[in-house]
Length: 245
Image (cartoon, rainbow, N blue to C red):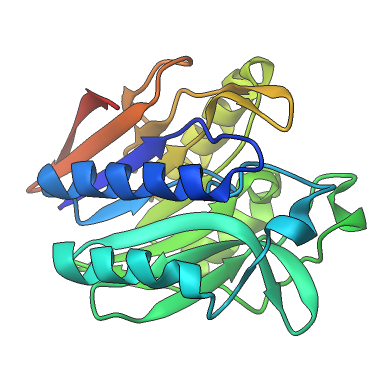
């Protein structure tokens, strides 16, 4: 099994440019035989609040068609974030594109202070991804601030916890400690994807990483460069490789 975390730098308010970047990241991950690629929180739009409604996607949005094609063609699971409008409400969500041409949605369960002005939260959309005898579940950003989220993931027999985040540089040490603790306490591997450079006018911390189920950091990217973190499982061992974008 090979997992990929995409460390991206979205262009503010330019969905088309960001979509094109996603396609290139996906093709690069597929070229390196990845079975799954994880993008950061709200990766397609970049992190936004005030403009979220203008940048939102519907669950059956025609702009998702290329993601579906790439997932099928490359036999890869793609997890990409966007503001998602469902049932007349707006959510911070992630689309899960599967190689069998199905699409599901995860919605952020715990919002940061201030996000509730623009977004709703929901516990109703929490897909379990089955991949090569592993069970994978998703967390978006502030979800990881709540230990009960990781506890629920373990109840779902999660073996790989996928954290899609937008955290700033000064917060990365805390993110690392939190995710390492979850990995160790719940005996589950953790893959984390973060922005680099800026989003919403704030610096992003980068440092996308992977922890094994003992809580040990296997590999990470730095805080400034866009790229892919590739994590490969051979027998029960994980190794990492970095690819610049």
